[in-house]
Image 1 (cartoon, one colour):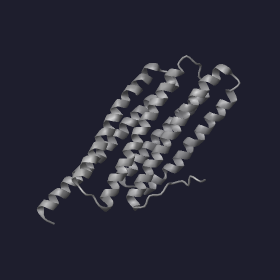
Image 2 (tube, one colour):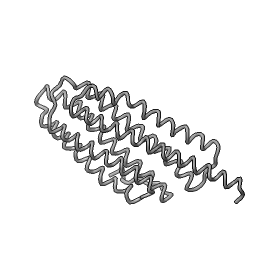
Image 3 (cartoon, helix red, strand yellow):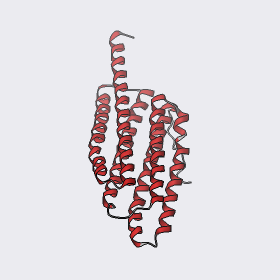
Length: 227
């Protein structure tokens, strides 16, 4: 390999490494937003909810850094094979993380809308569990990407089932308290919170699917939507 080509290759690899680092930072920002959103809804903390909403600008800013980095890399380079798979995986993962941040904002806004209503403690316990599960899934997804660990990526499917079960318990609890008109109004808003947490788990699974694609070169969904 000529010195020029070798230098270009080193530069390209440095750009890729920088993009991965930027994506990991975005993941940390999302984790911070998720913890804040869950804490806000469980304590009915309006001020914390406002902080989560404002903090989304930081996530959007990091999303733009990654997106623009990918655009510039593709404009200057012509990645092939595994390099191209990595770029495409980062492109998709960037979008999934940004959407997780948006879901945290939705949780915060629903918290503010429900501030004057009386909460149900068992549903709040369900949110705490779902928040912990979602945080675990994001960490597993990001670590699997960093380590190119297909097995860890596929383990997200089992973790996602735990969130889905908690979501079903929240729905069942809403049906139990539905006769109470005041509690019903709070519960109907909180069912959307539960759905947001469940969707964050789904996005983590999507990140895992991209890692499996990166490792194997073949994209497949971990679950069959028809089932």
